[in-house]
Amino acid sequence: MDLEAGRKRSGYEDMFISYHAKDDVQSTYAGSLFHNNRNYHLSSTKNNDTLFYWSSSRCLPQRNNLAKKLLRLLPYHSFGKCLNNVGGLDRALSLYPECVKDPNEAPKWWDHLHCAMSHYKFVLAIENTMTESYVTEKLFYALDSGAVPIYFGAPNVWDFVPPHSIIDGTKFKSMEQLASYVKSLANDPVAYAEYHAWRRCGVLGNYGKTRAASLDTLPCRLCEAVSRKNGRNAKAS
Image 1 (cartoon, rainbow, N blue to C red):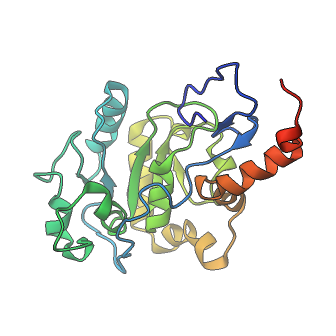
Image 2: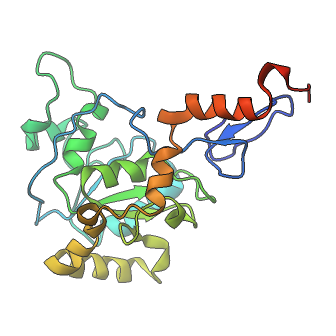
């Protein structure tokens, strides 16, 4: 199994598991097994002054530079190590005390990640590597939290998400154009609500398939794939 962007077969395996549908068995990042102990509290209100959330603690130059271009144009909170502007990694718990998972335990960043995101209209999601079908938990965290993701990553991202649910940042001619669109969307309740219509109407589209092919269901799907190959009676490759 190799779920990283540069997935590569060893040449010795009988079956290869990866994030791409063209591999023997697909495993997407959309399941709950990625940090499944999070605080799943959802805020009933959105921050109207600070438009979007960003959190990254792996400060890759390419991703940081891309983020900077947008961050300078829109009000934001950055909670990770990269471009932090709130005064600390656990500052979210001061701003949103309801996001504390267990007051008797030292907080971990993933405990309150989902809850903190839910207070913002938008979440910036930038992949480490932008390649086909490599859509990671960064995007799915944002969707699950009730925010609208501003996404930079896989060119075929619509194969993995609900219809009209994200803003594909790569489709804008400039960051200025993207920022202008986000500002107008934030000030238009009807237009913003349209990005959440899939939630109310239950129209999952490709997202349903993405969830069904997640790491959560991998054991059963792997057994099915082995069975189709005749299991232990399969001919050696």
